[in-house]
Length: 161
Image (cartoon, rainbow, N blue to C red):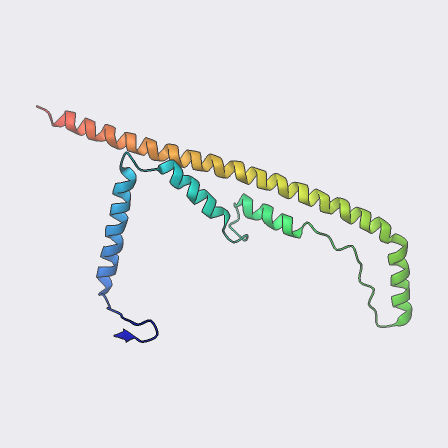
């Protein structure tokens, strides 16, 4: 089948062939990851950095998403709406807004600053958590390689007469 807009032929593969290719790629990736020259620490660092670029609405346990959402929502609108159906109600609302507006603005500013500080704390915690997870992932990869080497050595020693 030819796709004219793209300018090339599409070859349809049987369903099982796609799964086989994916399995081969996965097996080769695992083989390379188990090798001694594989940059596990760098890969963990890259995965952590890519995770930061994710959409802000993450899972329930995602600290970074929660902090970013808090940062977005920490702004408080202190301008009270004064729209009303009748003129007297609108005038009363405007008078009340003028009388207590300075206080509401002050309080809104303080709550907004608290929200921003809390968001900064959350982002700092997320940074540290990401760094610790990357370090742990790299250490886990090194430990898995060492365990595999030890298992191979034990199997070799057990095979000796």
